[in-house]
Image 1 (tube, rainbow, N blue to C red):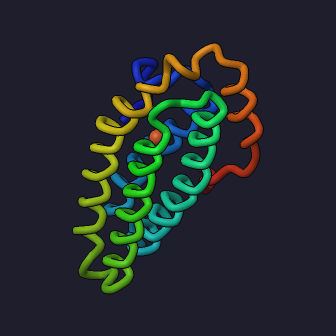
Image 2 (cartoon, helix red, strand yellow; image 1 turned 45 degrees about the vertical axis):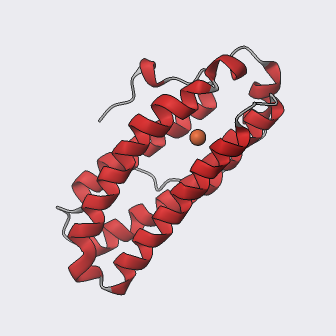
Image 3 (cartoon, protein in one colour; image 1 turned 120 degrees about the horizontal axis):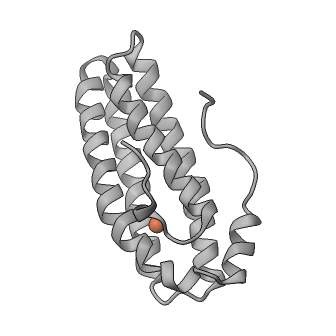
Length: 152
Ligand SMILES: [Fe+2]
């Protein structure tokens, strides 16, 4: 799966975050085949938690800086994402050997839906509000910092 310009929300920093999510989706595709798939899936779950913490905070700060009208509904979707990842993490931790296949598959489906439903529709909806808005750019840049991902 590849990021394409039609996924752009109009701000490079947020697009970069979305590209990282696509990396996790691709990573999950190979996790299941990897030798230590338990460790690989666990690593993806941790990466997703970090992604949510970092990226949603950044995105919400950008929306706040532009007084985006649908901020609250959007935050609700972010909360649902966090809950779903927590649920799947619990499910996985309860029995990593038996759950690996189910959790991997559910994660892939969930993230693919997130990409098409949330990023392509809900995130793109704020595009016209944040595009060419200096306050949005400043807010995104103030969140520069830690790479939330493992390297490679
Ligand atoms: Fe979002």
